[in-house]
Amino acid sequence: MLPQAASYEALVRAFTWQIPERYNIGVDVCDRHAAGAPRPAIIVETERDEARIYTFHDLARLTNRLANVFGALGLGRGDRVAVLLPQSVEVALTHIAAFKAGLVSVPLFALFGEEALRFRLADSGTRLLVTDREGLTKIAPLRPALPDLTHVLCIEGEEEGAADFHTLLEKASESFTPAATGPDDPAIIIYTSGTTGQPKGALHGHRILLGHLPGVELTHDFFPQPGDRFWTPADWAWIGGLFDVLMPALHHGIPVVARRFAKFDPERAMALMARHGVRNVFLPPTALKLMRQANARAEGVRLRTLASGGESLGEELLDWGHATFGLTINEFYGQTECNIVVGNSAPLFPVRPGAMGRAVPGHRVAIVDPATGTPLPPGELGVIGIARPDPVMFLGYWNNPEATARKFAGP
Image (cartoon, rainbow, N blue to C red; front, side):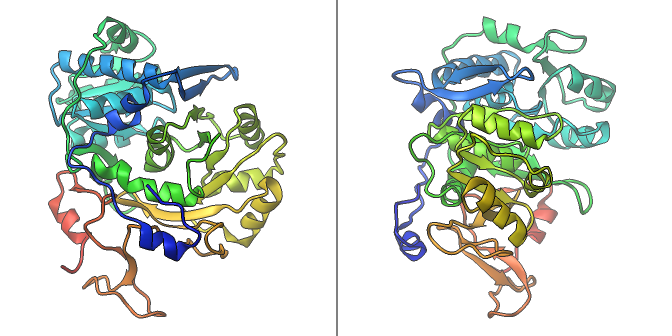
């Protein structure tokens, strides 16, 4: 979506949003890449460091089958489908199939406890859950309190209270006509962390992916480039893993490596990136700090870009990034409700320690008065405000219009 430009100012002048009247994330990220010679889409690595490659043709075929499974189980447009799994191809399949069918997906972190899961499943009114045996153990005692949850599919085989995900997939038809969704039609509910009160479900339309593209492309230095390949240790249950990495990469036809270590291991992470020729990576600050503390060696690692966000890295980590990978770590800023709206790009402007960058082209960002939304002059303290309308901005909080209204100020 970003045009090539020699300077940040030229890039901003040349940028225009490209939001079609009809748009479906599921069709975008796999169907349009499925024609012609097979192209790798997701490379799944096991605990034994063995890899299985799924092509875009595989994704298109399998998500069509899964969309038909959803229909056969009685799910209709707007119904919620939750995913409680670590990084795996089944995570991608479930989200993409839900998008294609006009359903609303709900990503859930595999390490959530029972109370966190109960709240999110009940609040969203989830009708179908895809999980594994570990997830089933957490869900089983919650089922009486979740009357809307009528179907559970287990990716590790049939279990009490759960059907076999892969058996249903094998029996379903590969022929499916995707829902004719628009960019503002609901696509996904991503829950906030709940650091202030109960978590809130940020409801996003299909345009969420298009809204993410400029920020991903900027902070990964005009992504994609020939030979690019993406990985992140961030779980695909979070917006950072799902829409900063997986979906943008698939949109561009770039393969993604799927490997979520049970516990982040700096040396194994380095080996993974070298083994699979990873060129683009999103590493949260915690992962970067662990790598630096472990003095992890980057032998064989040939990164083109490294982005990070969530907290300020500081000069020491930026220097470590230069020394270890030979590149500048591009920091970015965003929230679940409105993600990657500010970022750095070392080829376009100097990256300053402690600074999260400049407004990503297409987003109007300012320091504003929290009561009125009025931009403040330089040097005055306020809050970060993003002007609406904006394609990456959420539609509102699920079933919480009061909290939605409090998130906005001004006209």
